[in-house]
Length: 274
Image (cartoon, rainbow, N blue to C red; front, side, top):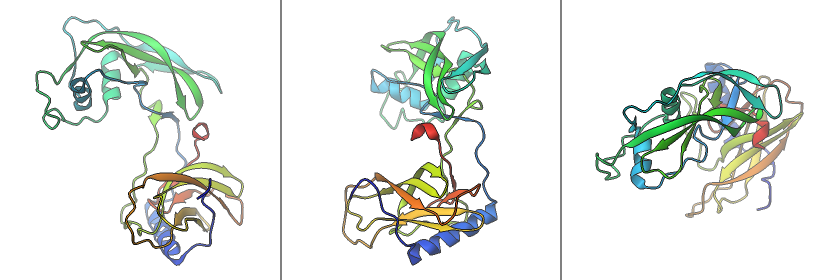
């Protein structure tokens, strides 16, 4: 279908959705630009396991520090950015760093048929080092704990910086009261460029979806972006594709928020993810 989804006149279906989204956004309040530095990727760079049991234990949060193991403490250091100045930060102590790295836990041991005796990852040592990660402020060198674990052939590297300093990328959630979009509308991914009156966004679709088009609705207080495809009644197993689309506005975007026609959430450009 080409390298980009072309822009097309807004369809009645898209306009109905965009107007409903605009109402939901105004009810919730116009979203402000996100503040802070955002981490691209996980808090455990290159995380890998040797066995299913190890992976399941990590996901379930069954991670223990072996008795008598001394892992050191926190302190202060800095994050060095390739594209900007350094930032002074507190170093997370080992246990809080592990907790932040594991994140939300899911008790999968029984579900994955892993015996309780094997569903545990035992930390046997750890040392402070630095790793390079990508952030919204550019490539950065950050402190990290390198943990060894019983039976694991490679270390678990966990960032030693608070999630309040290196924030996770905001995840879109549909605004309250907003119905699911029509099946002939396209899912909206990331906004990769906003330059004057030109916006580029990734739209998600299936390989069989016909006549893909990007749409935009310009309002006084926001710009709503999305897309559609022609009706298709057949079955298509090849889904989850993502293709960029560039739309041209009639006026410069200025400080208006760009809103997803799918979820009603704000789309922001993260330059280092282009």
